[in-house]
Each structure stands twice: as C-alpha cells, then as structure tokens.
View 1 (tube, one colour):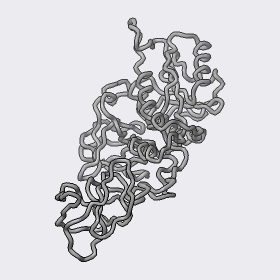
View 2 (cartoon, one colour):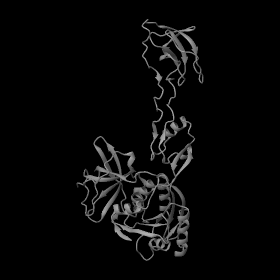
View 3 (cartoon, rainbow, N blue to C red):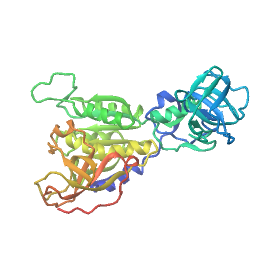
View 4 (spheres, rainbow, N blue to C red):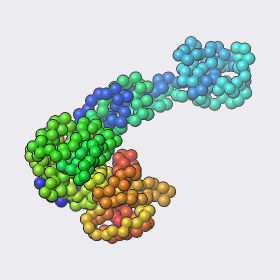
Length: 417
C-alpha cells in the first residue's frame, strides 16, 4: 500500500481499476440523464419529405408572367396528403408541418394573401424555397444523431421520439453505497446526546452521487457497532453496489476505524493518505473488482475528496472522460495563508468578458460546512509551499463541471502570486 501519495497518482491508481459498466436498454423517458453506450444513427431523412413551415398556400415556380392571382386547386387539412402536382398559376392550401404538393416552389403565408372565392391574390415576390422545411433539413439518413458517451438530454430525447425510438442503449448508472463511520456519529434523524454528531456527510455524498449520475443504494451509519459488525455491514454494501464510500475514521487515531475495517473486509489497499489539504485523510481499496473509497469525516475535506477521487470514477464507469478541466483564472479576492502542503480552495468560477475568474468561498477549514452552502464549481489549486494569494493574481483552477462541457486546457497552468 502506498501512503501519502500525490493526488494524480491516487487518481491513476483508482482509475486503473475502473472500467465502464455494461450497457442496458431503457425506455427513453427513464434514460434521461444517462450516458449513451452506442452511437445512434438516423434511419431516414428528417423530415422525410418537404414540409410547409407556415400555414398558407403552396405555389408553383414563376413562369415569368408576373401573375398575382392563383387558383386554389385543393385545401389540405392536418394529416392529409396532396392529391396532385402544382402547375403555373396554381396554389394549394397547406398547414404548418404538412406535406407539399409536387411542383411547390414556395409557401406564401396565409396572412399575406387576399382570398377571392377559389382564388387568392398575392402581390409580393415568390422566393424559391421560401417557408419550406426541406427533406432532410434536420438530419439526413445515415447521419450520426449521438455519439457513445453523450448524455441523454431532453432535446436528444425529442429527436429519438421523432424517429419512433422507444428505448435507448445507455451505460448502467453506478450503484453507490455510503457508510458513515465513528462511534460518535448518529443518523441525521436522531437527536444527538452530548458528544455525538448527526451524520451530515451521508446526505451530502448521496446528493452529490445522484447529481453526478450515480444511483444511491444505501446511506448507513455504523455508530457504536463492533468492528466485526461494521465489517459485515461493509461486505453487505459491497454486494449490492459498484462502489462503497466511507466517511469518517480515516486518520490514524486510536478510535479511527476505516483502515482496519477495510483491511478486515479482505480488500486490497491501493493507497492511504494524500498530499493535499483538505482531504489528506483519504484512501482507496479494491475488493473483487469493486472500489471502496474512504473520505474524511470533516465536511469540507469530505467534499474535496469526493470531487477529486469519486467523480472521476463515476464518470469512467459511465463511459465518460474522467478528467477534470484545468485552466487559468484571475482570483477576485485574497487568501492570506502561505506554505504547507498542496492546498485546494473551494471556489466559484465564471467566465466573463475578460476571461475566467474565481472567487474563494468563505469557510475553507476542513471542519467547516459554510462553503458547502454555495454552488462550488471549482477548486483553486495552490502548490505546496505557496505564497499568499493576492487579489487579481492568476491561479490554476480545477473545474468541477464535466470536462466535455467546457472548452478548457487540460494541462498544468503556472501560478503567479
């Protein structure tokens, strides 16, 4: 087992034991938010034929006569198909999305015409192709509609519905169980006695896992159980999950249980301890090809450990690029501390006219929850032995938003203080 490893080495060790989960077919509505596991191609043109883009009249091409009066040879209602072709001087009433008669050059909007019995008058210019949605304008037969690794969003679901697809092949959602350790930890629904603390990390991790595409199979608290009872609980959670996250008890104190419990379960320890702050007391193990990732019991450290160790695994299991986007940003405030290990500050990043900016969130201590109440979407990455960060300094940030949603340089970025 490696101890106090660099963050990148820890991520490499975890991801080396991670492969995408098998695909499954789900009804399209149930698959929203899942990741597509097979390329999807258009089976035919969409639309499959030329359609009217407005309610109005389909007319034939001009023959140079300069006419303004057209004979209406038929009036199509929704769901009806044309019976004949259009010739010079002829028109057909059409509806939005309806098929057009052969010979149609353009569609005149209804409000631009003057009806005269079986005729209409239009004094404007006929623009070929005007108000027509051409065959294959959206998609052409054989065109790729979605790549493997694409998230199924509402718009894509709509396209699949237009092609009559009831099911879609997606990667199975990772099943994640959460186990809070520590004899002083009680369920969040209980009233703690003096010296006890409610389990807030369990709900935090469950919410994050759900947000990131996982399916939570259980949130449990070991409390004052014996080592044997906790070991059996961990083994049960491993049987029902792809990953088990433990929180708390990750240090080497007398009452810290995580290392010994993981060892007793028969799991092989990959590493224990990271050279970062917060989140230094984190570790990972593997048992029967299933990961156990142990995170600190301190709220901020638990969250940072989750962002850096668990999110890449969840993405890899769903066939996504596990890397976080890394880029340079200007810090909008200051951080007075210096020195110490590599430090990761919870922040909010946004891209404005002048480029990326990062604002440090209040409450950066490992034990604090204040930063969790904000929409943290980035970590400011300060190297070991760093100097205080001045307002306006350029910093390297790790975007917590998936890398495929952001145009970013996924390379080390120098830091100027």
